[in-house]
Amino acid sequence: MASEHLGDRIARLRRLADLTQEGLAERSGVSVDVIRKVEQRRKHSARLPTLHSLADGLGVELTALLGNPPAVPSSGGAEPPQLVAVRRAIMPPLFAPPAAPTGAEPLSPTLVRAEIADAWTLYHAAEFARLMDVLPGIVLDARLLAAVGSADQRAAGQAALAKALQLAGHLAVRLGKTDLALAALERAHAAAGDSSDPLLAPMISTSVAWAYQRQARLDDARNLAVHAADGVEREHSGTAEGVRVWGGLLMSAATSYARSDDYDTANLMMRTAERAAGRLSTLPPPPDGRLVSVFSRSSVRIERVRLAVQHERPEEALTLARGIRLSADTPPSWRTWLLLDVARAHTDVGDAEGAVKALESLRRAAPRWMRHHTLAVAIVTDLWAGSARPVGLRRLARFLGVTA
Image 1 (cartoon, rainbow, N blue to C red):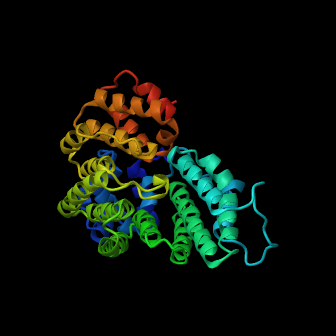
Image 2 (image 1 turned 45 degrees about the vertical axis):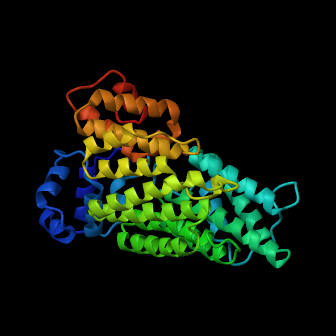
Image 3 (image 1 turned 180 degrees about the vertical axis):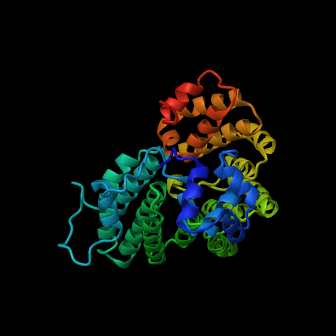
């Protein structure tokens, strides 16, 4: 359950693994004192590198410690039909009757790319239910496009299929289905290799690295991101598309370093990425930025805020946040993370009023995203357990199910 306290979740998983607190400390490298404080609820949260270490020691994915998002409760029952349809689109049956296009208009690369771009917009707006409804048909259209026509037309279809499957992978991660996500992303990477876009495979590598991170496979995530970034830097550093893909990979590698508790290396890489983002203003923009990696000065700064919060540097995080000027193409999902991290930082410095103010801004701007994030529940839970309860906190607690 998303509302289960972190300490209760760790204690439950530790007992399932037949480990004492001392045994978990030995396996994970986390001190017994920290484990004891978390399990006794004397510590309401933990640094993300600590959670990665605990997940590794327990032999579980990171998501097992983070819990299910509030908007995606796990009942242990059968998957809903919409998710089954997405799963079937990602991994088609070994035999099925020939499929037909889903729309009334004739299939074309332009039409399918427009469908995919609109679907990514739904994803960034946290419209996951609507996305699950339309995504299977989009994947089907892209798969048909990749199977017919001339070699160039099939290559364009493979590019569309790669982007559609990449989106399916992102959706699966958000739903806590990381194995399904990797199945989608591995197929996306293969389709990208059959396309004529040399940047598509490294772009999808960023998504694969993210899924690896969610499974606590930090070395795999870092090695993949660094390898792909080196290739892009050698061959495509002169275009906006190349800079954006390279920058996304560099940020991904930095995140893996940070979650491995190497904040200094991560911070150095993020500063390099931020300087590189300044080059984008001198280069022609890509034709459709919605289908290229999210990378700009504001996205790098948002990620720097996040890493500072995760390493218990709240003052540094708040200083970085004050200097952010959000670009017009910053997706709602990234704006959501910024407000959540600002709220976390205010909580960590004891400014409950500032935290509630940031959370109220988030609830007004992106209520769906707020309800999807376990971090929002963790922050409100911490605030509710505190001695000061500012005006507005009760409304937020009810909205997220922290209190009745």
